[in-house]
Image (cartoon, rainbow, N blue to C red; front, side, top):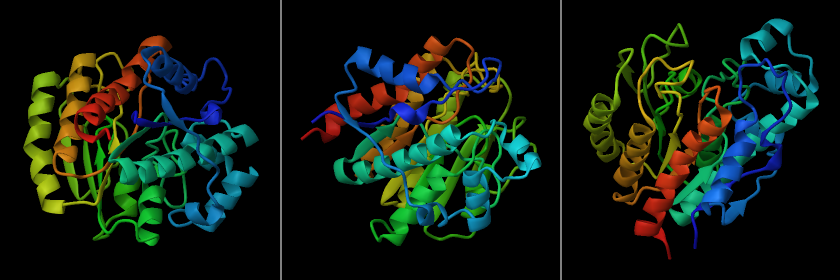
Length: 304
């Protein structure tokens, strides 16, 4: 069977043309995957029940956001204009990450075409992140008894601060964030393992650093599932990045992560994370690198 891919047409909503969050990238990514012949086994998520979201987020915050009564100060911290369509989009994308994880447990590997909202805290959102899909997915699978241990590998250029805060002291979810130190968020949280990187780091140094940390970490944690945030904002052309990776470097990064996990028999659920390039066609192609890498790994190791 082909690589399982998760997508929903409602992953994108209309934002003002001047807004710096590139909302059209989700549709463009899916269309690009279609053009590559990779969107052959596509799954569509459903809306998650509110009590699933409340496994991580406080009921007051969830209700206030969904009902449109959140304080304007907190909306500004999120950075996205509220609308009923965005509420729906937020929840359906979260459902997509949950579905991706379930598919990964079933097939060994699966990819969402959204997700990675790692700046969301239990009672507030931040940095374009409203509900933390990685955290909700992890808590739900643990509550259902589908896994006992999860490793979150966060290679977005920004630290996964919300995720780190949520799972601080949790013995069942290990958080690993490799990010640019001199970048958002200004106040970092403490992940189980943080690897801060200097501004301007290029492909070879980045990949060497990753190889020093990831394989020993996998052997130490021995997770039942890896949630992989494959943000492309470490790219040298990303306006919010400050690192200097190339497309080839990002692809090699993704191959390195997936091979390290799959060779150990560890299922991987991938989300696309951050990416803010102004050339939306190039950005969509860059986000497809994780799907292309996953396709290669799936065909080599997991196809049945």
